Image (cartoon, rainbow, N blue to C red; front, top):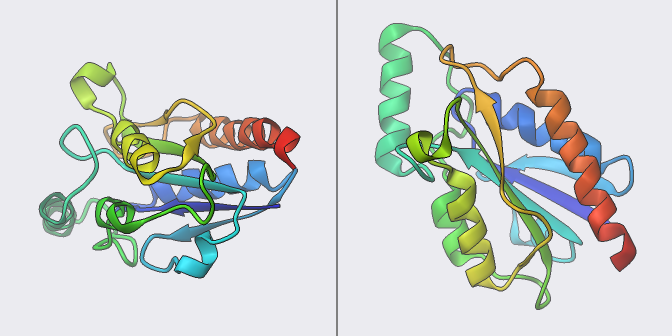
Length: 176
Protein backbone atom coordinates (compact mmCIF):
# COMPACT_ATOMS: atom_id res chain seq x y z
CA UNK A 1 0.00 0.00 0.00
CA UNK A 2 1.12 3.54 -0.75
CA UNK A 3 0.50 6.70 1.25
CA UNK A 4 1.03 10.21 -0.04
CA UNK A 5 1.46 13.31 2.12
CA UNK A 6 0.75 16.48 0.12
CA UNK A 7 1.69 19.78 1.75
CA UNK A 8 1.87 23.52 1.28
CA UNK A 9 4.62 25.31 3.19
CA UNK A 10 5.79 28.92 3.42
CA UNK A 11 8.65 28.80 5.92
CA UNK A 12 9.38 25.06 6.08
CA UNK A 13 7.42 24.18 9.21
CA UNK A 14 4.58 22.42 7.38
CA UNK A 15 7.10 20.62 5.14
CA UNK A 16 8.91 19.33 8.22
CA UNK A 17 5.63 18.07 9.69
CA UNK A 18 4.70 16.42 6.37
CA UNK A 19 8.07 14.67 6.21
CA UNK A 20 7.68 13.46 9.80
CA UNK A 21 4.16 12.16 9.08
CA UNK A 22 5.49 10.33 6.00
CA UNK A 23 8.30 8.89 8.13
CA UNK A 24 5.78 7.60 10.68
CA UNK A 25 3.59 6.14 7.94
CA UNK A 26 6.67 4.61 6.33
CA UNK A 27 7.11 2.19 9.19
CA UNK A 28 4.09 0.27 7.83
CA UNK A 29 3.43 1.45 4.27
CA UNK A 30 5.35 2.98 1.37
CA UNK A 31 5.00 6.72 2.03
CA UNK A 32 6.40 9.97 0.72
CA UNK A 33 5.82 13.68 1.19
CA UNK A 34 5.47 15.99 -1.80
CA UNK A 35 4.79 19.70 -2.24
CA UNK A 36 1.40 20.60 -3.69
CA UNK A 37 3.30 22.34 -6.51
CA UNK A 38 4.93 19.07 -7.52
CA UNK A 39 2.16 16.52 -6.99
CA UNK A 40 0.69 14.86 -10.07
CA UNK A 41 -2.69 13.19 -10.51
CA UNK A 42 -0.86 9.89 -10.99
CA UNK A 43 0.66 10.29 -7.51
CA UNK A 44 -2.80 10.44 -5.93
CA UNK A 45 -4.27 7.67 -8.08
CA UNK A 46 -4.03 4.34 -6.36
CA UNK A 47 -2.63 5.58 -3.07
CA UNK A 48 -4.27 3.90 -0.10
CA UNK A 49 -4.08 7.02 2.04
CA UNK A 50 -3.86 10.69 1.09
CA UNK A 51 -2.75 13.05 3.85
CA UNK A 52 -3.04 16.79 3.11
CA UNK A 53 -1.64 19.63 5.19
CA UNK A 54 -0.98 23.33 5.11
CA UNK A 55 -0.31 26.37 7.26
CA UNK A 56 -3.12 28.28 8.90
CA UNK A 57 -3.46 31.80 7.48
CA UNK A 58 -6.14 34.18 8.76
CA UNK A 59 -8.05 31.39 10.53
CA UNK A 60 -8.08 28.95 7.61
CA UNK A 61 -6.34 27.71 4.48
CA UNK A 62 -4.05 30.15 2.75
CA UNK A 63 -5.04 32.20 -0.27
CA UNK A 64 -2.81 33.81 -2.88
CA UNK A 65 -3.13 37.11 -0.99
CA UNK A 66 -2.10 35.66 2.39
CA UNK A 67 0.84 33.79 0.85
CA UNK A 68 1.95 37.02 -0.83
CA UNK A 69 1.65 38.93 2.47
CA UNK A 70 3.65 36.29 4.36
CA UNK A 71 6.38 36.37 1.72
CA UNK A 72 6.47 40.18 1.74
CA UNK A 73 6.83 40.31 5.54
CA UNK A 74 9.58 37.67 5.52
CA UNK A 75 11.42 39.49 2.75
CA UNK A 76 11.10 42.91 4.39
CA UNK A 77 12.24 41.73 7.81
CA UNK A 78 14.75 39.14 6.65
CA UNK A 79 13.34 36.99 9.44
CA UNK A 80 12.62 33.83 7.46
CA UNK A 81 13.50 32.28 4.13
CA UNK A 82 10.64 31.28 1.90
CA UNK A 83 10.26 27.69 0.70
CA UNK A 84 10.49 26.87 -3.00
CA UNK A 85 6.96 26.70 -4.47
CA UNK A 86 5.54 28.74 -1.58
CA UNK A 87 3.22 30.41 -4.05
CA UNK A 88 1.31 27.14 -4.62
CA UNK A 89 -1.63 26.52 -2.31
CA UNK A 90 -3.70 23.50 -1.37
CA UNK A 91 -7.04 25.33 -1.52
CA UNK A 92 -7.20 25.39 -5.34
CA UNK A 93 -5.64 21.94 -5.67
CA UNK A 94 -8.25 20.44 -3.34
CA UNK A 95 -11.07 22.10 -5.29
CA UNK A 96 -10.30 19.99 -8.36
CA UNK A 97 -9.29 16.79 -6.53
CA UNK A 98 -11.37 13.60 -6.77
CA UNK A 99 -10.65 10.20 -5.22
CA UNK A 100 -9.29 7.45 -7.43
CA UNK A 101 -11.95 5.14 -5.99
CA UNK A 102 -15.04 6.10 -3.97
CA UNK A 103 -14.22 6.22 -0.28
CA UNK A 104 -10.45 6.53 -0.79
CA UNK A 105 -8.90 7.15 2.65
CA UNK A 106 -7.59 10.56 3.67
CA UNK A 107 -6.47 12.69 6.64
CA UNK A 108 -5.86 16.41 7.19
CA UNK A 109 -3.40 18.45 9.25
CA UNK A 110 -2.22 22.00 9.66
CA UNK A 111 0.41 24.09 11.34
CA UNK A 112 -0.86 27.00 13.38
CA UNK A 113 0.08 29.41 16.12
CA UNK A 114 -0.07 28.22 19.69
CA UNK A 115 -3.31 29.06 21.42
CA UNK A 116 -6.95 28.07 21.34
CA UNK A 117 -8.25 27.16 17.88
CA UNK A 118 -11.04 29.69 18.42
CA UNK A 119 -8.39 32.42 18.29
CA UNK A 120 -5.92 30.95 15.79
CA UNK A 121 -8.20 29.12 13.39
CA UNK A 122 -7.36 25.75 11.86
CA UNK A 123 -6.64 25.15 8.18
CA UNK A 124 -7.06 21.41 8.80
CA UNK A 125 -10.80 21.80 9.32
CA UNK A 126 -11.22 23.35 5.87
CA UNK A 127 -8.94 20.73 4.33
CA UNK A 128 -11.04 17.98 5.92
CA UNK A 129 -14.26 19.54 4.63
CA UNK A 130 -12.90 19.72 1.08
CA UNK A 131 -11.62 16.13 1.24
CA UNK A 132 -15.04 14.89 2.43
CA UNK A 133 -16.90 16.92 -0.19
CA UNK A 134 -14.64 15.48 -2.90
CA UNK A 135 -15.58 11.94 -1.81
CA UNK A 136 -12.69 10.91 0.43
CA UNK A 137 -13.27 9.03 3.70
CA UNK A 138 -11.42 10.60 6.64
CA UNK A 139 -9.68 8.10 8.90
CA UNK A 140 -8.83 10.65 11.60
CA UNK A 141 -9.98 13.93 13.04
CA UNK A 142 -8.02 16.90 11.62
CA UNK A 143 -4.75 17.41 13.48
CA UNK A 144 -2.87 20.63 14.32
CA UNK A 145 0.84 21.05 14.96
CA UNK A 146 1.88 24.17 16.84
CA UNK A 147 4.28 26.86 15.70
CA UNK A 148 5.91 29.36 18.05
CA UNK A 149 5.95 33.11 17.41
CA UNK A 150 9.48 32.75 15.93
CA UNK A 151 7.81 31.08 13.76
CA UNK A 152 9.28 27.64 14.40
CA UNK A 153 7.75 24.32 15.32
CA UNK A 154 7.24 23.68 19.01
CA UNK A 155 9.85 21.43 20.65
CA UNK A 156 7.93 18.14 20.44
CA UNK A 157 5.93 18.68 17.27
CA UNK A 158 8.15 16.68 14.88
CA UNK A 159 7.97 13.63 17.13
CA UNK A 160 4.23 14.11 17.57
CA UNK A 161 3.84 14.26 13.77
CA UNK A 162 5.81 11.05 13.35
CA UNK A 163 3.63 9.32 15.94
CA UNK A 164 0.49 10.64 14.25
CA UNK A 165 1.75 9.13 10.99
CA UNK A 166 2.20 5.79 12.75
CA UNK A 167 -1.33 6.01 14.14
CA UNK A 168 -2.72 6.73 10.65
CA UNK A 169 -0.93 3.67 9.29
CA UNK A 170 -2.45 1.55 12.06
CA UNK A 171 -5.95 2.85 11.16
CA UNK A 172 -5.65 1.79 7.55
CA UNK A 173 -3.78 -1.48 8.17
CA UNK A 174 -6.97 -3.56 8.60
CA UNK A 175 -8.11 -2.30 5.17
CA UNK A 176 -5.17 -3.93 3.38
